[in-house]
Image (cartoon, rainbow, N blue to C red; front, side, top):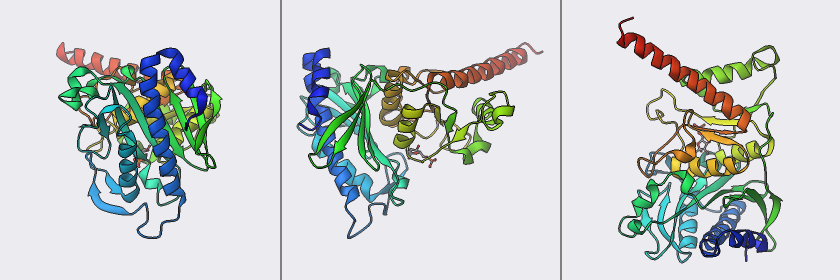
Length: 344
Ligand code: F6P
């Protein structure tokens, strides 16, 4: 078995039947991740893995060779693992892998594609949901559930080591791949996001497009010890959410990909079902928070399979400051609308 006994025991203790099904899916994904890590580590002899294919995925992102290789590996690994409805960043819409499958999987097979050509950290993000009976006829019905319905979620990170960050709803565990045996070994159980980490992660080149609550938060951080936050903040942005999420999990601080005024970014960039929701589940299970500014990410019902959402996640203290900033701004806007309505 690729994940060792610990995970299976933990899952089994919660719900023997559901656990068996979820464990099978996680095992299949662990096998896929081991194969993807191997592909990444092997120098390409032909076309480079980062080569742009001239095609776009369902949501307009340019596809790289490794995006499609990872998609094939994940999809094949999940066939025969009890997965019914399947949604990937690389598929046009939801598919059915096994009509009798009791679970649904939403997946980003290769997160952080722009880091492939620079040998940076990239990853695979997944979310496991129950498959409702209605989804036997129409797999898209499995992907109208809010993130709160997730049974398990996690990501694999292909960096100096291949790691798995996993939650099955009872805390967050971190595993590392032992390449010699192909087994993911437990490194840390019950990971917690520390408060008090003065570090933020945002693509700051978009500052001119941000809305007031985010701009105010980052400007306050930039003012450092002399500003309202009274502390010097550090900034990190890898362009690969898995790497930034892992750093936040380890050191605290906050990650933001907000909505902004660019065309197509009105709801931010990240996809709800296979990027934001799994990371939000992990974050909450590690004691942190995840919000679109006003609502918890885990409460949002997807409006369509590839729906995007503004995403802020991290340590509870920083996420709360951002939530307050959004509340103040929306209350001010409401007051202004009321005054206009009353002809003041
Ligand atoms: O598409 C997902 C993603 O690659 C994330 O991993 C990352 O956080 C983000 O996009 C980077 O976006 P940008 O290139 O706009 O900074």
